[in-house]
Length: 287
Image 1 (cartoon, rainbow, N blue to C red):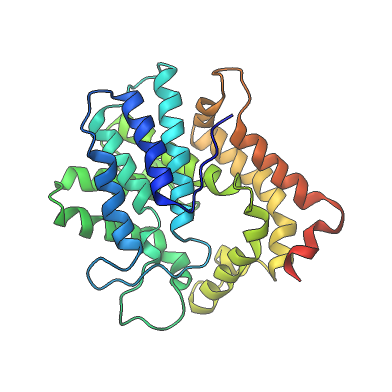
Image 2: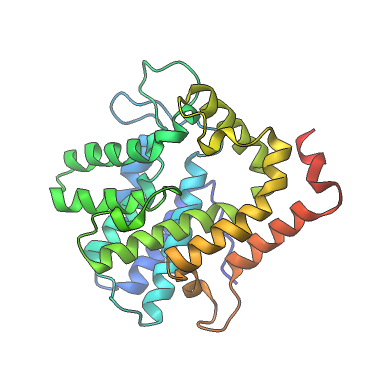
């Protein structure tokens, strides 16, 4: 079992990510993790240029921290398992920045006072890639490094054709797939995931209001109850398939002990799906 971490607390998550970082690369620069967290927390708290504090109700800073914690654990497990291609310090750093910035596309400029960042749900992946390029360019990263981060961010697009992403190496692809895996597992394994589904639906409803793509997935749910009813099938038929086939079952590196030990993330997701299947279908959660 992984130690409990309060994912609402950036410092608590940073400590765990730093522990994973130094377990993989004991001699690496200890400033890498605090620096990345500092940059991104400033962005999400309204302390970067003319961007507001994040106001998307579901895709908030905690969501990013949940995914980041999961990715750090997964990369550590993969390293300890001796998997190839082996992770390098530069790709760890770029992968960390990518997961921390993967939902920066929900951030709004200060003059953008209409609605919340949820209105950008349909375009948030491209917006996140653009935001990452803006921030990292200012921090002195080169074009290839920025492209690597953007490629990894695009792995979180559920509609993305992964074969079309211009990865620059097999390792970059692997770290990108790790990011995509962690984005899904981190949120769906959260103990309050079921309780947050009505909040997620509220984001979808706002996005549908602003989106010109009437056939986009955000418009396929009739309400929070419908989203909750359909989530177990989404997990079973779509997410598990993506994790297994598109992302190459990277989640297995979270098995503790590896390779045959239990997988706490998968078990917690299954428990959440059981809760949604329970009598009354969780209706009390959305009254």
